[in-house]
Image (cartoon, rainbow, N blue to C red; front, side, top):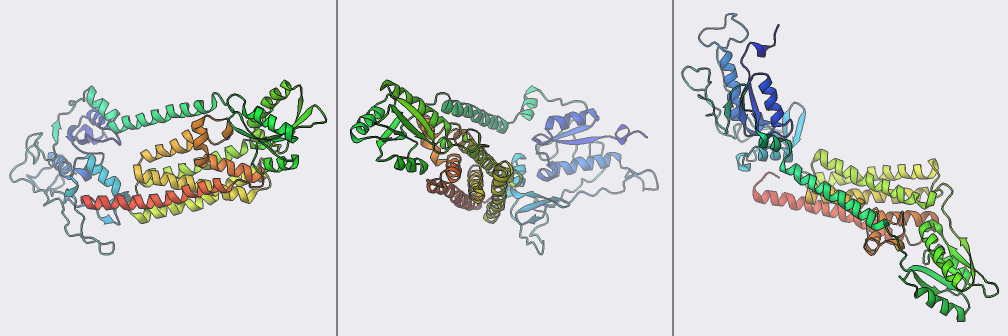
Length: 518
C-alpha cells in the first residue's frame, strides 16, 4: 500500500524562527513530501506560541479530505460529518513550570523564551488563578474565544479563504515553491546569538594562549627569600652583594645560625639559605625542592656564579625533596586542577540542564546545596587516587580530602553565582577566572617568585593558586602558611553562595516589577 501522502493532500506548518530542528530543514522536508507549506512566525513549538494558525492548518487538512454532503456510511476512513475547531487551552501551570506533554515539564523560563522568539507579548499570557491542588483557572481560554468555523460551503482553500490571509502572520507557499534565499539560509544556520557566543569563545581561546605563554615564556627570579648564615663581618657584605644583583633575583637577610635557617625554610619563611664556612672554601646552599624544583634550580645557578666570583665552591643540600612518586613536585598542582575542573563543570552542567537562573530563590538554594555532597565525593575520590592508589602524596589523606572538598565547593559556588548574574556568559567568566588566569598563576609549573608581575600578583588570590599552596604545604611542610590559602577558598565558597542567592532574589523582584512571570 503506498503511503498516504501519495494519494492525499499534505499540509505542513513551518515555524520561521525554529532554531531547534532548523526552519530550513523542516521546510526542505515538507517540500520533498510535496506539501502545501504554511510559514508561521513562530518557534519550534508553534502549536504553543501560535495556536491559531496551526489550528487553521489542521482544519484545512481535515476539510480537504472530508465529505460533508453525505453521511458516513462506510465511504472510507476520511469521511467527516462535522469538523469542530480545537479549543485553545493554556498549558496548566505547576509551580512555575508549564506541562507541555504527558509526564514532561518545561521550565517557565524556557517557555518564556519560546514566546519571546515567537514574538508573543508577555502580557498576552497573564498569570492564571490556579493552585496545585485544585488546578482550576480563572479562564480556560486566556487567548480569547475559540475560533468559529465560517458558515457556508468551504472550498479547497479552507475556512480562511485565499492563501496568505490567515491570522498570526501566516502565508501559504505552494508545494515545491518558497525556496529560501541565501540570507534566509544564513540566518537559519547561524543566529546572532551564535555569533556572539562564537566571539566569546574566540576571546577565551586567545586569552588562554596569551595567559599561558605570557606566564611561562620567560621565567625570571624575583626577590627569592634567601637567608645568609655567616660571621657578622661577612654576612653584611654577602647580603648586600646578593641584594644588589641585577633584576633583584634575591631578597637576602642575615640568619644567626644554620639551624634557624633550616627551620625557616621548612616553615616556608625562606626559600633557600647560604651557610658560609670560614674555615674552608666550600659553602652550603640549603634548599627545599618540594616547594618548587624551578626555584631551587635557579637559586643554585645564581649562587654558584656568586661563589665562583669569590673563588669559592658551593655544596647543595636539599632539606625537603618531592616524594619518589611525585615527579618534579607537580602532583599537588594537578590534583588541584582536577578538583577545580569538577567544581565549575558540575555547576555549569546544572545550569545548562535546569536553566542558568533558577525560577525561585529556593531552587537556587537547592542547587547550591547539591554542590555539598558532590564536593565531598570529589574530595574523597581525589584523596583516594593521590594517596593510597598512586602514592604520589602520602600520609595526609584527611587533609587532602578536606582541602579538595573546599576547592570543589569554592569553584562550584562561584560558578553558580556567575551564572545567576550573567546567564550563560557566567560559564565563560568561570573559565576565565579558574582556567585562563588561575592555572598559569597557581605556582605549579613555575612558583610565584618566577612569574611575571601580573600573574605573581593574582596567583595567591585565585582558587587554583590558593589550593596548590594549601596542598603542597600540608603534605611537605607541616601545614605551615596554609591559613591564608584556606581563607581564600572559604571566601570564594561563602561569597558564591551569598551572591547567588541575592542575585536570584533581585532577578525575580525585577521580573515581578516589569510584570513578567517570575
